[in-house]
Amino acid sequence: MLSRIARPAVSALGRSFSVSSQNNAKVAVLGASGGIGQPLSLLLKNSPLVGDLSLYDIAHTPGVAADLSHIETRAKVVGYMGPEQLPDALKGSELVVIPAGVPRKPGMTRDDLFNTNATIVAVLTEACAQHCPEAMICIISNPVNSTIPITSEVFKKLGVYNPNKIFGVTTLDVVRANTFIGELKGLDPARVSVPVVGGHAGKTIIPLISQCNPKVEFPQDQLAALTGRIQEAGTEVVKAKAGAGSATLSMAYAGARFVFSLLDAMNGKEGVVECAFVRSEETESPYFSTPLLLGKNGIEKNLGLGKLSAFEEKLVAEAMGELKGSIKKGEDFVKNRK
Figure (cartoon, rainbow, N blue to C red):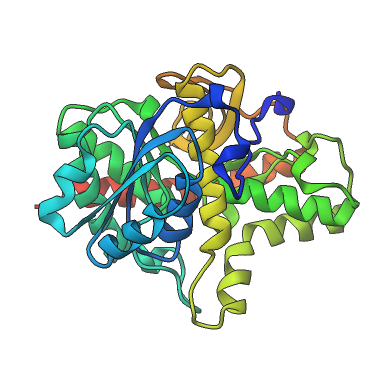
């Protein structure tokens, strides 16, 4: 299963991509001036999969757009600023990626972000539901375990909900798992493929190391330590940046990887598999990240959990309470919103 996971090239120059992969999609980035939004927009500008790049934020977007527009690639870049310009930013978009919100600071949990980011995501996804209801929606804004249920409830309220088109981007957990295993085993991380399931916070992040391709084995104590490092890798970056931000560059890379995979699949490429946090019936949790076969209309098939080790089964069981709580929190937020 995992050998089919697409590893899109995030090239420094768009020219290195084959011309046959072009489909000129219109992609909107909401939160394009931020710490994730700017490097993410740079990576998207470099891809021939993107024909029009629509950048939106509440400040500085014209400058970011002007800067990016000088890069010698085909994507046309337009910046939009402020709520009155949001509808124009979204019209005609086939894929919307949302990194908007406040970053995590030292001592903050992803839950501490909830009150601010929940409102931001609700406002932005309402606009998506109204102005590009058929678009693929890729949410980066944390806490993803709550912002995806928020997005779903907003789309339901407006009568345009399609669970196959709403994704919580958890790709950074996969990228980290691949990197850390590559380092420990002396492998090229680009050739390591580990599914990471569950959610996108702390103990809800569950790397299925038993399903790693190529196959790797660790003694139990090392396996537990590695799993813990993958789960807390975001905190590792927050601490290292000492109050100056959270994981922005690696998240931009991971976000671009997911967007390129989805655009490839929308463009007819077969066998594209990525993990994402989505509406799910694979476990008792109503939302859950698993490997997904992507297609022209979003999720083509949920590939499920596969065979778990006893250690992984325990991790899944232990994550359920926190996952369900975060999901309910997101759903309740929309229900109680005026």
